[in-house]
Image 1 (cartoon, rainbow, N blue to C red):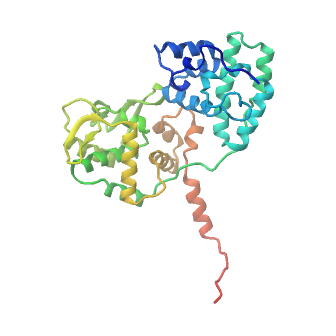
Image 2: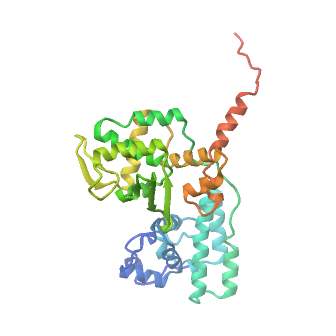
Image 3: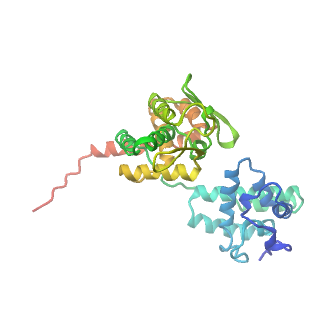
Length: 333
């Protein structure tokens, strides 16, 4: 069995590898010792580093890595694992984990292998053999999430509360329905909203600037909120509001966005809904209008295939088709 990275050992890694920060001497030392850690640090966004790092962190202690119980990814000498060990690891993952998660994990391992080759920790032949043990797996799962009905969306607005809290929550809900991610909503400032063009302009995922046109209803919700918030003081577009209706100047965190949307859904008795379902609903609605290019641009996707994965119209169409099938069952007395 391969051995863990040697001294300085566990003290080397004060945090999960996906959260390595600039200026952290111990974490930077981990990068020099661990090719997989170096690969993760090369990813552009914090979210990507955390996501890929957490997948590797969960691998430790699994069959094929029994020598690393409770370890973090940066403590495992991934480049020393043989092609047999990697094959075992891949097989175990493929039988217990969704294919998309397996393939994302294998992508991180392949990236680490290439960094190891660059640092001459592996020969060209070793790299080829071990990459061969990390081939993507086939398969799929039912897509998560769903498309919200118009009636459910109305119910959500009715459940936004009263007074200033209602105005803020309705604006938050309207912006979420325009397809923005939680992280994007949380960083919106007042300057992002242009009332003359009815657009939101902001820097989103992967440091890409996006312009999102707002539906008339969303504009009305934002304008109603700005009547309460004020339009002069710069700062977050969506601010905190106390239970007594006092409007503050502090912004909302990603978690607050998540919790607030969840609270609205519970009050509206709209079940099985997540914040990302608003994004799925918008994309599905635009696709239903026959404009895949517009859906891609609104979503901010580089690849149209990514946009199509958000399409949840299929379930609605399937249910409508099945409802027309006559199954001649009658309950006997």
